Length: 193
Ligand SMILES: Cc1cc2nc3c(=O)[nH]c(=O)nc-3n(C[C@H](O)[C@H](O)[C@H](O)COP(=O)(O)O)c2cc1C
Image 1 (spheres, rainbow, N blue to C red):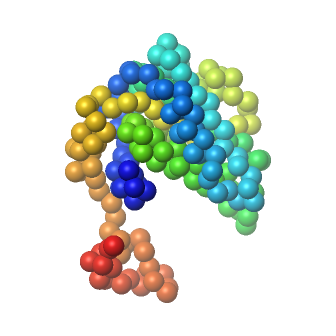
Image 2: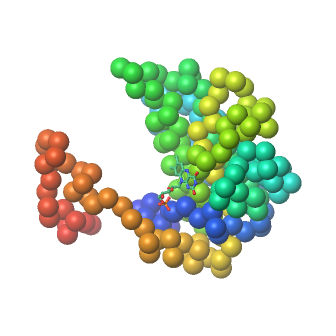
């Protein structure tokens, strides 16, 4: 897919998980894409714990993932995204470990989408239980988890169709201002390239 197409087609698809294994080369490439993200002073605070294989994924879900998020139990891979706050800058009270790790996660999700794989970022898990389960050190935060899977439908497009048709986003004018806060350019939507 083209870059903009990937950005527009990425969506969260926890209900669309196939247990089919992910080829090691694809898994590597998706994780490698995360490493190329920009970060404050190049601190690269992100760390990824890759949980592979259904028995390990199911044990993780049983230990730390509850509610509707537990549907990821059928995924061949779940990635826990971690960072140590002290590994990155704090600038005027802004803690950049969160921002920088988010940048890496965006790369990861987009690379997965490019391969036609399903992802779903999740903050809904028991962090303490997950850390115990994966032997993650005390001073490391687990910021999110995502399954990585082939879609249960025939193709990514098929799997994503319904979700994308229901997608809601704030209007361009609500989130983009020109020259000063609150000033909008009403015609912008019409001139999209
Ligand atoms: C940090 C973060 C945490 C999220 N946590 C959950 C979650 O626990 N459970 C869930 O179903 N979706 C979760 N989501 C998915 C969001 O609901 C989803 O990204 C949002 O509704 C936009 O939909 P889209 O990703 O399909 O574009 C999370 C997303 C992010 C970025």
